[in-house]
Image (tube, rainbow, N blue to C red; front, side, top):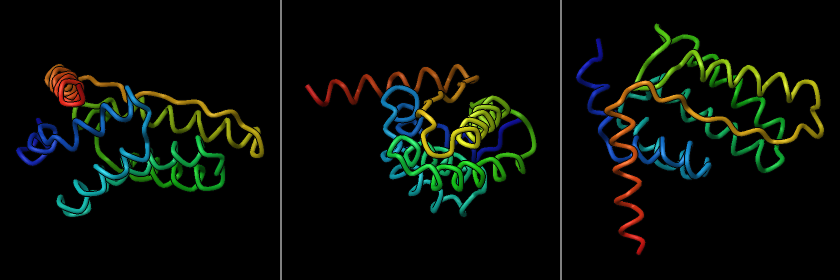
Length: 144
């Protein structure tokens, strides 16, 4: 059962932005910006930190900083691995851990030139999916 605290996080516009920036925009720098605020406000939760580090790891890899990517993805994997359960905050954490492991394997096989491979957060909560889509639509309308 989800705690009230996590329900609040899932409804926070910054969390919705994180999900949209990660999955739709692949803007991992913006993921970092919005998630860092949320992480600090929520007692520096290791779960939120793991999500933050996953995005920063992808940002580093996408920008050619493979050693930074390995460092952050490894840290993300440790934080997410310490969390009880395979689902949290509307996300499939088991799938996220697998994606991080696959990314680390690709970077280990070709440390100097591993081509960037994005992956998505697997959303398993219909409410989160709908809220993220709504947030994205509102953002699009504001930009017009």
